Length: 272
Image (cartoon, rainbow, N blue to C red; front, side, top):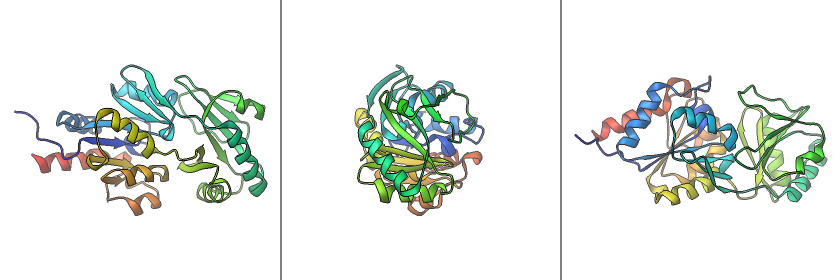
């Protein structure tokens, strides 16, 4: 017997806090649910704020061979071919002006940055608090090195302002020059103006001949909100930021409780 059709032709999933559990693994239950949905005719696209170098090892572990949207929408990556299909970089002159303007408003910032490319380095300033992870980074000892090669984005932190407050004041101060998103705990990012997960996902979907009207999206952080607005159906994880829950079509269980699988299994059962 052929599998029952799945009600969406595209499943878009964020990584951290969504597809990945806290220990950065993907449960067997979630793997099985995604396999069942794709076996029933849906395509799966990973949509993440991580750049390709910080995403690639996860996709390889999953046996993922399709398209992935990385760098908050800046990069469309073909995992099966290990090839970067499109990449949008931050105008470094504009970014330098934006940072100077923001620092004149809030004081010195701690900085990090993601360089463009399949092997783009992550630069981290001495004052920037880095989350533990499996991949190396390059210490940023001279701020001028920030501008030495093309960048996808810049990360900012402030000694007194929390993530939401920093993102809010940055949008108010430099929102006409760049985009600013809060992507996770301690992760506020400066991006090319007009860039979002929605723009990257729409490019990837178009390559597959798929539409927003047939898309279900899963996410947990404010950087997922544009993707939620683009997709026909949006699902917030139980661990999601309140701003994400407020705009989602529905909620599911947390990332550690296999929330994606819970929703996919329900949809598959309804179609059976």
